[in-house]
Length: 279
Image 1 (cartoon, one colour):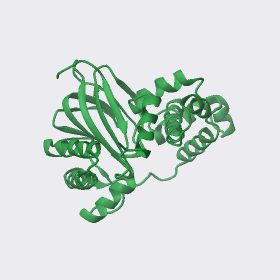
Image 2 (image 1 turned 180 degrees about the vertical axis):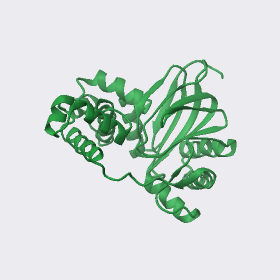
Image 3 (image 1 turned 135 degrees about the vertical axis):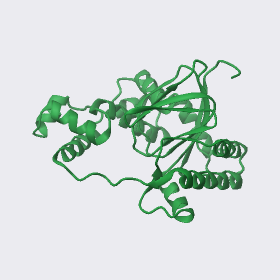
Image 4 (image 1 turned 135 degrees about the horizontal axis):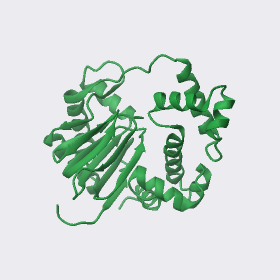
């Protein structure tokens, strides 16, 4: 791969609502365990990405796609010394459900079955979506996105499994999550949270991991970054957003935001502002 500089652009195109867009080249970047509210459709152009997904490492090389369903914990890192270059689209569950209803026979909530798929044709489609968005070609961007998602659902789609029955552990985990969402800026310790919920710290930790795929402190960092994104989208300054969601200061937000979203909060917000004033 030419060049040795990491770069990334994370943006939205106003004519493609409900979809985030990313172009990136990473070498040393490591994405910590995190989730997305939207689907991840990452088309690898060069190199190899390795990501931990549902208990095992998955590799996606040139011509393959990394596919992650909403709210599914995963990581990301280079699988070769030269890193990886890719383009990604992040369509919302509503966008994917709408496409699935029109073009597939999937019953229930549509999603991806396998986390990686070798399909150079769809990799090209994803990069064409990004190019069309960059060029302001709304008709092409919308059309190509629908073709790409339809193809992926037909090749690798199915109904997402229904949530498991509400066991006592799942109920406690859900209550703990609710407390952390409410008290995000000043969360309780694990011991106090467990005591307030009438359980032990280790029982709560186990129940939370089972329900959400990560321990409470990791989930909280992920949730803080999600909320910071909403604040940045609304025009809140990064320093104010950092304090509002419970980070000590902006450098803490910068570090966690970049390790989850892939770009710093300032760059993220500048691209969002550009959506309101397209060139």
